[in-house]
Image (cartoon, rainbow, N blue to C red; front, top):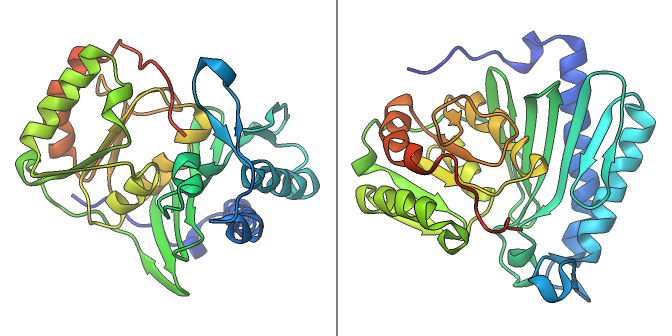
Length: 283
């Protein structure tokens, strides 16, 4: 059943201001990432000989641009970003920044990367923005609502009311990073679901919120990967849990579904490997 929708104008003024600030951060990141997409220059491998974890000028400069705005407009808030780590705060609010989620897609010229902006009160994500500049798509979520702004048109986001996993469209970024037990759980989901798509990174969560897909499951995630996703999916009427079926926080495991019925069916498989850890994260 669709949860009650609270439009922006009924939110507190402080919350409305935070939503506006989150969108300004998205605009600042867009101004950096768009000119560099398919023109990103050198890529640095943060892992060296131990693996491949790419970072580009777009990652660093976009996060720096967002941090500059936060330092000026929300100086008491904490900031936790992928590229420059944690800046402590004293307000109780923390901004989680992933300037280019899906850097591998970015350097491959594929428009499935996004900018993720999350704002949490304590450990609870309250505001999320998933922004895809190349497609001019933005997905914004809060505790009781979500909307998209696509090529200038604003629309309320609502999940698809599908209740059966056998009819669901499933996604994960890369099943090959999973541990054997995690992979076994995912394989059971894959065999049950109607259709599976890979390599979409955070963009898959936006499509769940928009009503096109029904389940995304991942592990090995960092707080800056997760904080923006939960408010968008929940605000659109979806469900976000960890692999044991508990309400999702900013931990490493996440499964988001369009409905509670699909979540219940998915958790039967995922609980078997809920304590496992993936070998590496994805970006």
